[in-house]
Amino acid sequence: MVEETSKLKSELKPVPGVRTGTAASGIGYADRPDLLMAAFDMGTTVAGVLTTSTTAAAPVRWTRDLLARGASPNGLVVGAGNANCFTGRRGEETVAFTARQAGDLLGCDAGNVYIASTGKIGVQIDLEEMDKAVRAAHAALAPDDWELAASAIMTTDRYPKPGRVEPEIGGVPVTLQGMTKGSTMIAPSMATTLSFLFTDARIPADVLQAALREAVADTYNMISVDNTQSTNDTILLFATGAGPDHPAINEFSDPAFRDFRAKLRELLAGLALMIVEDGRKDGTLIRIRVSGAETVEAARRIAATIRESRMIHRMVLQDDKLALGRFVAAVGMAAEKVDQGKLDLRIGGLQTMRDGEFTDGSMVAKADVLIDDTVDVTVDVGVGSGSATAYTVAV
Image 1: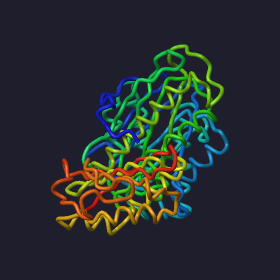
Image 2 (image 1 turned 45 degrees about the vertical axis):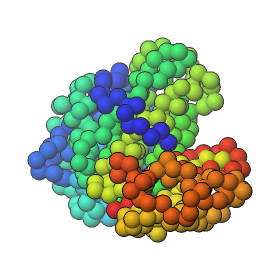
Image 3 (image 1 turned 60 degrees about the vertical axis):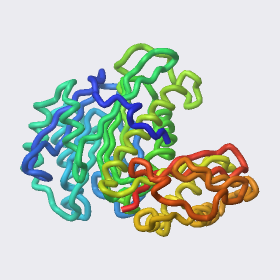
């Protein structure tokens, strides 16, 4: 995962082929915009990664169905403050109603309107309020309403989380930007979030989907705040094709597509880290870098095992000294291949283990390794070239 959010541009710019509008619906919040609409030019493609929860909310099931059918996106409606989850048949009717109303305004079929939501579970939505909000958001559609868009999707967030990168396709600059929300109920598969990304590049849906899944695996699926998954997690990436001409991309492995893939990963990494930073509040950030693993997947599992160790969390939060053996034990608990004779461990930049032996005892003072309320854990397991980074919060 790319660690530095500073690599992201914080100012969102107009994306050719996209207009956004917001409205204060009163459904989720009484005093601010809490509904977002986006309208897309014809020919836009979409990719999505959604929660793996078996109790997914009605909007997730709707959007999952549209993605499975390859429905071209003409519109997107996002509600904040009400998850529309465990609302029974009425909840499903609310999603269909919202899509129909938006479709009528946008001049498209309901089956071309993607829906997402976040917020309280088990609360019904008043259809009259939804209708008014959809109409108001449609009336506000504009190419430069991005600051309000990033704010409208927030719930537990303390601040909006926008980001922009500048990729090239075959040497041609294109736009890629987006926004995310979240700070609590953050767990992998996916981390609890709504995230919406937009590019003016021309990318087929299957290639876009492969790129998004690749990026999510190394970013959103590597963070945790409270190890609690949501029913509404949704990341959608829209490609309008309305930007500058660039070489046609027909294959995921096309060399001309490499920079876009790398910048997409950078964007998602920066947005995911914003979620963790917001979620930690007064807690301690733990950043785990694993290298030398047999495969990338093995590195991810080792990093995730360290990330989820409750004993490490308690120790970082409560103790004046950190027991290094607990980190090594977590490495082994992942049941991935490790060369103990080559195992290296660094905590906060200090070399605490080299070639399988502690360099200066089995304890380290937390004050010596805690930098900016962050503990960096770096492990090399000495068997291959696989690497991964995970983040969590001790609170």
